[in-house]
Amino acid sequence: MKPKLILGIVAIVGFTSLLMYNFGESISTYTDFETAENMKTAHVPGTWDNTQDYGFSKESMQFTFFMKDEAGNTRKVIYPRPKPNNFEQADRLVVIGELRDDVFYADEMLMKCPSKYNATNPDEYTATSSTQSL
Image (cartoon, rainbow, N blue to C red; front, side):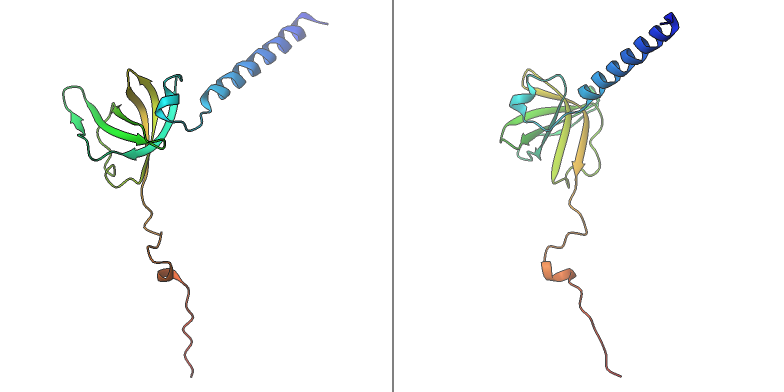
């Protein structure tokens, strides 16, 4: 075989292996705070614990709040950006980052807000036909 062909095949195999490795690292499933301790990057869903203090610090330029995960564990979350506008209205939060010393350092935060299209009364949006006789 020609050396250029062998080098090309090795380069393609190496590039594909590196691509698959990075793709596998970027895929993350939801977890809780307890499991997140052993992970480099974790996606933790939960709800905002509004019984504890929260706020934005102008000195550190960080938004700090407490979040309860789906297993019931509550941890302090530090988010390096200002508080999102719809933070108080969010039904569910997903913080993405790492847990160090019982504090979750979030690089990203996703919020699921209640939909204005979800009816509180199931009969509210039922289709009714109003036919008039002529």
